[in-house]
Image 1 (cartoon, chains in turn brown, purple):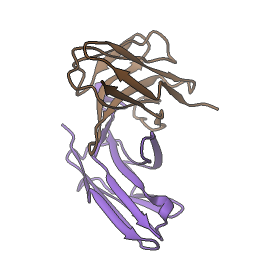
Image 2 (image 1 turned 90 degrees about the horizontal axis):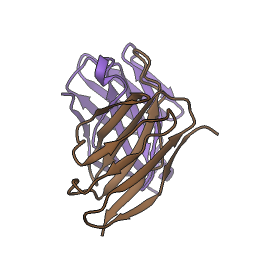
Image 3 (image 1 turned 180 degrees about the vertical axis):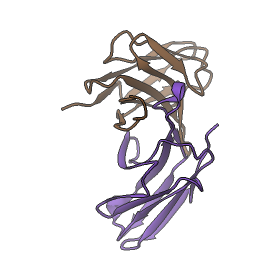
Image 4 (image 1 turned 45 degrees about the horizontal axis):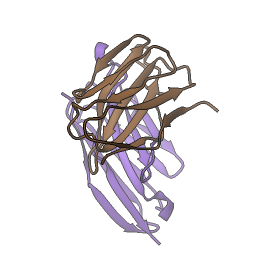
Length: 115
Length: 115
C-alpha cells in the first residue's frame, strides 16, 4: 500500500545533540513537508520541498535542516541550535501541480523529547 | 499572512447530538480548504476537501460548507457518536507560486462525545 513512513515513533535527545527524523513516501508525490505540533497548537510549517534538490524555509525553520536528494525521502535534522525541540513532528506529501494542492497525505508522526 | 481560527477550542456533547465546528480565515484568496481528523498521538486523516469554487462537500454524516468571500467554513457532524471523539483541524491552501501546496492550519477543535 502507498503511504508515508516516519521513524522512529519516539525519539529522545540529549542537550547539545543533533538528531535526524526520517520520512519516506512511496506515493510518487513531488512535494514533501515537515510540520511541528505543540500541545493546543495548530501545525506550523518547518520546511517544505516542491521538487528534488530544492527546499524552502517555512515559518519556524531556525534550528532545523533538511535535504531532498531523492524524491521518496525528506529527512529532518533537529540541531542543537533548536532550543525547544520537544514536540510532535509530522511529515506530509502532496502533488503540487499548478493549482492543485490536494492529495495531502500525512505520516503517523515522531514524538521528540529532550532529556 | 494567512491566519486560521477555529471555534470552539473544545466541545463535549452527549451521543446523538448534531454538531457544528467553525473555521475562519483572514485571506480569502484560497485555493481549497480541508478538514482533518487527528486522534491522540496520531497523524492527520483528511475528511473533506472543498475547492474554492465549491460551496460544500458531504461524506456520510459529515458536511462541510465554504463561504470564501466571508472567509468562513463550517463542519457539520450529524448524529454524533463516541467514535467521533478526536481533534478536528481546518486548513487552507493557496495557489500562489512559492507557497503552492503548503497548508495553513487552525489550532483545532477537541471534540468529546460521551455515551
